[in-house]
Image (tube, rainbow, N blue to C red):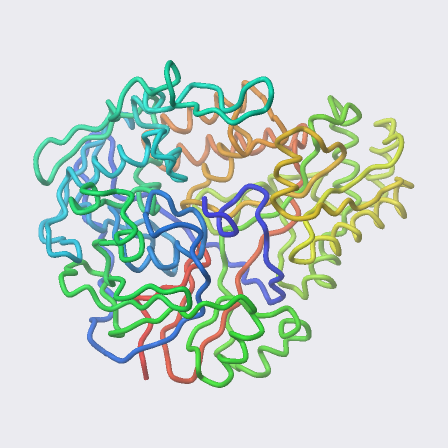
Length: 568
């Protein structure tokens, strides 16, 4: 998950635009139980070669541009254009399609055989081989390397042996190296990865993972060339990474990152324009002003003052667009608050007293859609109406449930971070609870997003905290396992339900997507029994482009499809 792009407790954006509500399906790639996997069958995009150059609003990457260590949007936008993976997500539907992979086969969802297409090359002219995937994933998973995307390899057999097990601080609070001494990993490579030949490797998982092929389009699974392993911590590689994508980094400075076409690219998702410049902005108003002046061709952040009253639509006309994205926001009942323990009626009462329709209309100017479940509509397996009482505004029912629950004693707080207007909606919810239920409610604004996350992890907050999620990969599973799975890193509610866990396990072991989705839906429905969180709304991303370009799209992750842009 990319921070600000994919994060538990998503930092959020002040997007105030109309959210499209159409549901798109995301069929799994052609992985079969016992059958050979077929090519994606996806029509190739428009041929490359239209030429020209464009400027895109950019922001400064957090880390050097290493695929396994980039988990935020600024670096991720660059790497999306520079790397190719086994799987590519369709820009319109988010459906996974074969990219470097010719096939991904399995008979049991535990042992996968990956065959690569011939002809793929990195931008340094070397071939993309099976070992480039295996070596890259081993490097990313190895604990001492400290790669932010390491945990994506957790399902692969042997992952635990690559992790450091020592203490990170002593009794006095001094930092320790958890990888030293007895804390060192037991192994340096994943036992579940085997190179068969130059074009074939196998992946063995510790448990069945039916949607593993869907996950393999995420940047943490990109291959790395031999040049990377010569010096993985090289500043030069981090500034100008060598990938197998349609573009390569030509230059990288504090103010802009320039991409040029990868002359060795042989895939079906080639870029159209010759040169792409990501110009760094810290102020969305500045990039928007440059957009109006045609000095920037694509911006994916519209300033709030332009979204209000749809001023941006008046200025840009049909160049003002909104992309449906896999983002959902919710509020979490803190497990540290004794009043919420074993009191599902109290949770449901509070949910029934939230007027999501009015809040999304009045505060978000229609840019949000009230949530009716815990899964985004953009993924295959989405089922409307999974959340019942807790998501249905009904003041009479809310009062009845609240009285039956015994109510909340003392002041109830909603903790939020200060950016992106969270205080506004939180205050609206508080006001609703005061007026409908007589709850003494207050909004607690933390100094920043990092503080909110730290306090949540430390168990320092009671009452309710805000949360959100932007999908890592287009799967219903990605909205359930990382957030509600027992012991999951983003399970702020500490939800622990053996039946839910079993449903996840059964879903992962299913041999076809329909059966898996049915089990995941069964698991999602269990959240409606106790409400570890209350879903609030689904989000979208507004964006705009200049008069000079065409075919501008954002995918379901909210990332710009750089390769598809053409110059008029």
